[in-house]
Amino acid sequence: MIFIKYILIFFVFLIFLAIGNLYSKRFTNRVVELEKMNNMLNIFKAKIKFSCSTIEEIFTQIYEDNHDNIGAIFKRANTYMEESNSKEAWEKAVDEAELTTNLKKEDITAIKTLGKMLGNTDVEGQVSQIELTQNVLQEQIKIAQEERKKNSKLYRTLGLASGLT
Image 1 (cartoon, one colour):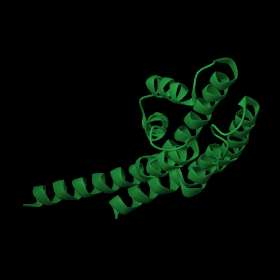
Image 2 (cartoon, rainbow, N blue to C red):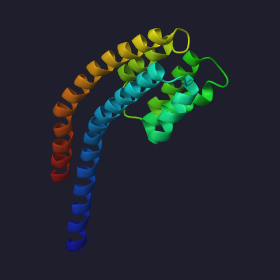
Image 3 (cartoon, rainbow, N blue to C red):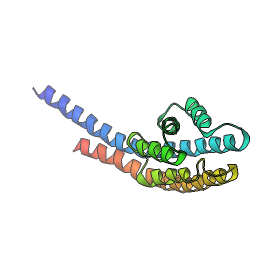
Image 4 (tube, helix red, strand yellow):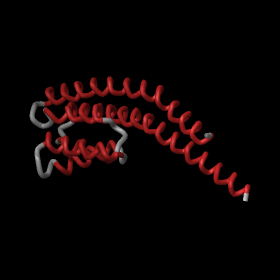
């Protein structure tokens, strides 16, 4: 009977440790997703500048290269562009991404700013909007890295301490 009790205590310890690591991982994933979005916007900017492709074609190419949560934003936006304009499609796709990614409201708002001039201006206007969005994302990445340093270790330690208790 005491053997079963020790096994259950060990499993409770492991569960709390896993929960702490799971919360800790969310901070790391947020930084990774923001950096990935920034890289995809670099690709988007280069393709707008140097290719004669439409926004829909560029979004499809970006998704084909990145089959993850961030790449799915471009896929959804491409799908929604069939029904509505570029701005609405982008905003709708980014809103849906809030549920599947580790991005915070501030990150989502920063990414939404790209849609303001998407498809409505000439190439230089769109490039400048992408650069503006990238600058805002760079600030969000710095904030996310600071939060990761501070909170990641906190949640792991908290999970460990709760499990030991």
